Image 1 (tube, helix red, strand yellow):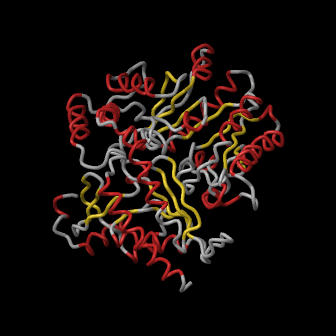
Image 2 (tube, one colour):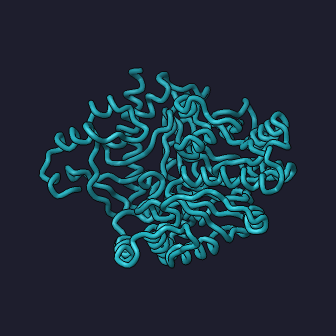
Image 3 (tube, helix red, strand yellow):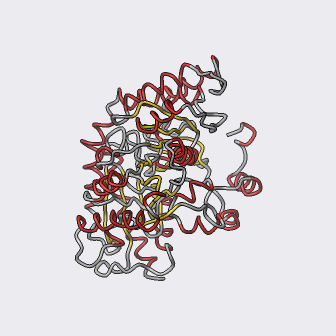
Length: 460
């Protein structure tokens, strides 16, 4: 915080924020009336407000602070790089040492078949890049009519116009007026929400995949460029597909010769217990987008891992790809990413997620399954969610289109734990560093908050 603001009261800071700062995904009038929460410090798995309230972060910032807060190694990497080369672009046949080293490291960590990376600053940018790469590839291959990209309902792929159009958030489409053409959306692999009575997860997974094949036939196979999906739908409510889903999607993609884009902006860099979530789901993509945890959110950086099929066309067809950003391959961001990946490796965070974090999260969620509010609990690695329902048997939701989720979220904040509400689905994505003490603390708060939420929900 600027030194001259430190003596200001919370009310003064909130007034300044309301007067000048437009927040993402916010009702600005309501936020200005309520007042913002002012975060001034982060340490380990905790954040602190300007009034010194400690809050356990169950969302890793925004699905990104995987190594926790306050890691001096990353700050020192940024400082050293800023002193030496704070910026130079990667246009004009130019590069820098951090981007060279990071590119080689990402090729080492990525699934087989990925040796090239194109950089941006956000997941939205990287998904825009992927869209352009997909369509450029098909033009190079002599099939420029292949422009249609098939995604899923509830998918979130970013907030730029192209990324919103590719995503499956209907409320965001309404504000795009209209969404861009040639993006089609099919059934989300969300068994709890969309399965028929008595339909097994395996059968539902195959039916959800079949909706892609049906869309391909409806559009015309000669027009379809790619299928896109997150291994686990994150911002859409931690919707975990049945095991039958992704292998069937890959079979369909291979049958029609269609590209596959895996959006790993949330699932990459340890969230699932592996560097990337695709291999564990049976996904063999042609492109992988990433962002967030590549730097643990300490500084913006994103990218697209480009597979052999597309890279070969780029190199052999000899056509310039008219695309790039001022900050593509920013040296400071790349230096911080290298420091972040080193921390994840040297502190064995991936085995920690597999051997401790995942079972601990499963135990926390299993402990609330019988609560009257809970319709379902689920997790994949350190991605978790639970459904808030009025009636467990019928899966009937509360009135108010997500009102109970917001009630629950606000209780969590007041009790000192951050979970995210997506409608009446509560999502969690804790830093990879959570130990037993944090799971114990979270467990106690979750039980208390569910009781508080139930009492309020009965009033609706």
